[in-house]
View 1: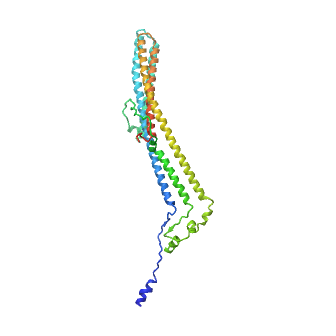
View 2 (view 1 turned 90 degrees about the vertical axis):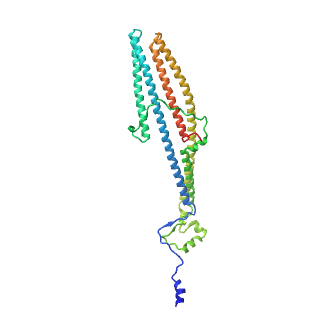
View 3 (view 1 turned 180 degrees about the horizontal axis):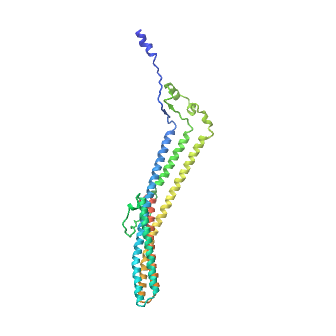
Length: 353
């Protein structure tokens, strides 16, 4: 009896096949469907990170440009304040000459008019400066009352711009990097669409697959692996899978075209602002000489008016020319700094490799 229980009786209740009762399922990545999705998602995430970097770069360039505009408004204020002092002296001079009987009341009226109109321009420049300061505060995430800059009255010195820039600097640009990552993601999507031709074989613990079933699955003929159980209907999908592949390829073409256009636009932007920065540096030098010449002409006109050889209208004209030339110089300096700022933005913040 003992031997019988020890032999057949004990082994009769043992089942060599097993079943799983867990509510989980796995899909073997036989055709790269899942890994393709992971790759596409990773590339898309990298593109999104580059988009964030591009937004940050744009914000930094906007802050710099606003700061430059603020200093330009201050330079305008300083110019008008200096001009007001000179115009006040001219006004007093005409009054003295009128009292002495060597000038007309028209001279006094013209001098007063010029002084008052320049005073109004100074008030406008102060308003502009305040608005730029408020804009700078908003860009920094502060309320206007929480932010202020001391007035310097001067534009910052322009950095030296290289005569030539390597096109490889464009590789630093986050918008180009984002476009390149989207091309790679679209390429991965093509692979995913192609993998849709093959069946998705899901192994489910809740389905109670037995080891014998798994064994049969692995030893199944090629036709089974091509179609899968109950997968023959997929042959009659109306071309949906081939359409998906064509759609993915079209998306890849679109991403490639967008990448190409981004690079071409970047090249144009760099060329434009490199030329602008160079030409504006030359223009600033010429305009500086124009200011000096206008000032010399004003000195001559003042001396001639005091000597009584020319009318006060000559002095007014010379003063207007000087103020205009100085205004143009500030404008050129502002535009030159703006071009350099934009050029730096075009090469992702620096022109060193």
